[in-house]
Amino acid sequence: MKKINCDFSPMKKVLKEDIRKLIVALQNNIESIVDEENCLLGDFEKIKRDFLTIEMKAATFYLNCYLSPFTDKYPELSTCVQNMSRLKHGGLIVIQRENPLESLLTSGIPIGADLTHSLLESIFYPGSPLHDGAVLVNQNQIVSATNVLPLSGRFTGERKLGTRHRAALGLTERSDALVLVVSEETGRVSFAFKGELFPITTWVG
Image: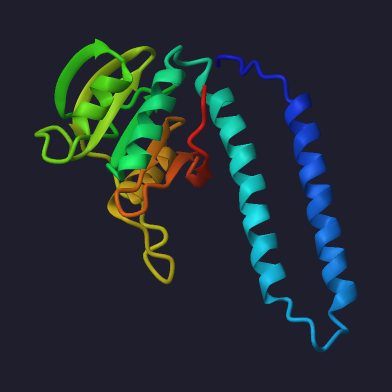
């Protein structure tokens, strides 16, 4: 198992301060709830946004930690998902880690090229013959495109997820792979790891 070499101290300090501010905001709401003329709905909405910001900040940090032992190209991945997010181009990028993935996905079209953001963006460009399915990345190489991933059976009830997100969860439920997802509906970026889905900022590596 490759060692994840990250200095958690600065991030923990930032998160502790952010959480402290959130607690203060909640305490202020508790004190002002007795005021019948004070509507707290706007405050709740701001607290919800602040909490999501904290979650995304932490997830972005951990994403870099999870990626760095397995590829030197996470700045290229960063640029790619930022551009795709801005343009609302959907995408599904699998980063192979320790586990072999051949038995878990239906192989697509071999690429065998160095990973660059421009090549990834061209693969997922709408109308490209390669844009459907997932791109498989191993170390610093784009191995293949149009790969089909196993779908997760979770979140098919009240919380419905699109095919890309279910595919990302499905693969990470069965392996230690990390999967980046860009939603073409919203442009939001998230990553799946160990069967969980985390929203991230369009981070800079």
